[in-house]
Length: 437
Image 1: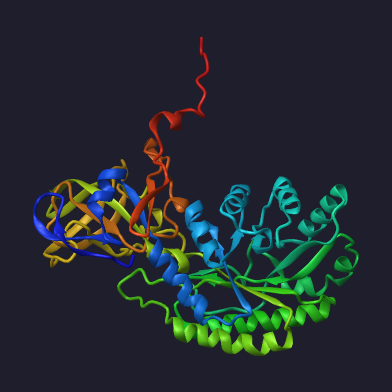
Image 2: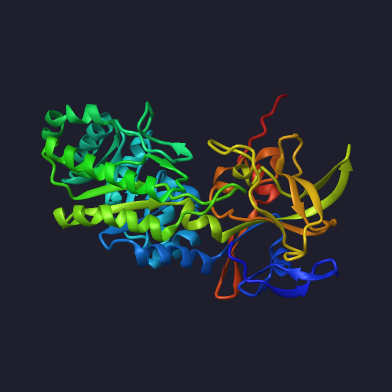
């Protein structure tokens, strides 16, 4: 997170520099809303989006992928700045609708959509349902006929027969549950020609995530646009839309560097310019989640105990992997540390290493191994930075019944509660005790 910090007294009375967000001391946020807590900086969120939007070719629309952070206020803020929404569940459809995203700026994708979800998309009039199989196309045709709807718009998700280097997690170009193989699509004109109520607007392809090389993203864009052009001609489709994915990465680990935004956008724009000139009425979509939200968030925990075990120092905090599984290794992540800082002594010099753990009864509850920190005392606040993406949404929040933490968005110098902390009694309300007598 981009820190707005200034000199202040730390929470335990030791003089030092405390972490601030837009002038708000982190100790005040922790006192008002408790810990653990995710704190988001709305100004950083705006800055990241606007920096991209100002540079990106005007033919390309930016869509926010809610799976990265489905908080309704985060979604609403990005929507107010001009972002569309890419969603994958009924709750996400409800979220974007309540957040004020217009139906014409919503696409719905996912390999296993339910009939209820498809019916809801048809009823809501979303810009496009992204079909991941030909059977799904046929089901939408059936739903449209049953509801008397004409020209229900879809995109066909293509699993390309080429590879793209540089992604942290590959989503296409090999056997996957996502999309329709390009070769199968090339042989599907007869089926598509028989559609009467479904209108194929174009294609979607998503090759991978966590790209940190500008050249890789330009290559990815070039390949997808060329494939979309080829398929449109082969299938007799008027090309109205191409979603060429996103996958912009964020540097988390010591040996990584942030994506060079200027070089990245310059490379993408160079590819987009001739395509947009050849297809002036074609809408291009770049869908981003992690890149838009990661740097705006900090996962804030309070040190409960500081102890030593067999020569290694541990900080046992009040939150851990139950709220931030991404920080310890999921999917393509190996077990390397996210950036972790002392928020109580934000600018103090590090003096030693600590392994930072949460409160769970498992040795895997480690959010930072041998983290270099200033001296840590019980009561200090620690922050896992770059935590605005894949925090609660990718974590086992119900493990041991701790529940999910509060989420706070700081906007215009005021901290707003944007998700209440799970309450103990509420966690039991959906369970039922049967009478064994």
